[in-house]
Length: 193
Image 1 (cartoon, helix red, strand yellow):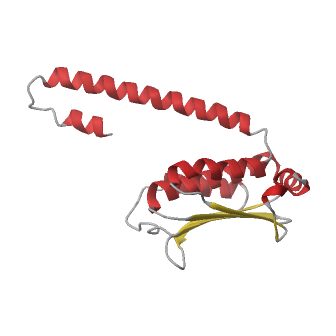
Image 2 (cartoon, rainbow, N blue to C red):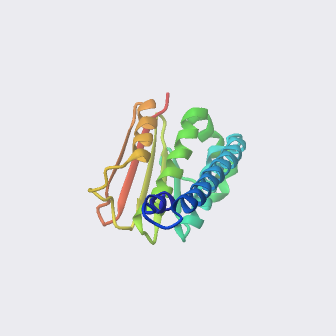
Image 3 (cartoon, one colour):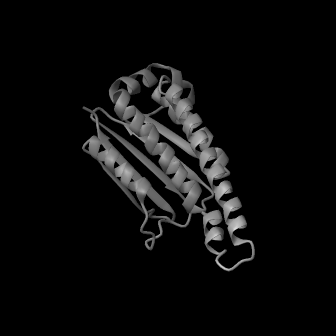
């Protein structure tokens, strides 16, 4: 975007056409690089879809560490009982996979990914927490942070619209609000069919 803006500033510059051409080639190169990276990420995620949901959630939290600058905490409960990290390969993990199914499991992983991505991009937080509660008929994801909270002046919320659409697919809700103690709180809920 900055390269595109620089291109627009060249109206009266000497050799403007030559510089504009170079900038446009650079923009094309960046766009192509972004397309290739997205393709690589998509192929990696396709392979991940074969993994249990709990393992995928742990992986998302681990991957988010690089962009956040800290490790987010994660709490996973099944019917109100907290799962230990050691349980990620056990009966509880199998039960979560069975309850959620493929589509809802994919959406829960995507919600956690988007929630942590939003914290990294917008919150300026020093900590984040992901809570996933799988009950008999519903799943609830809560992503909280200690950052600056949602900006009420921001109109662009495409990521939130995506989360809301995922929630609606499961007769649920998604909302982003200021957290009671400061920061933000992303709540996403869906019903298990």
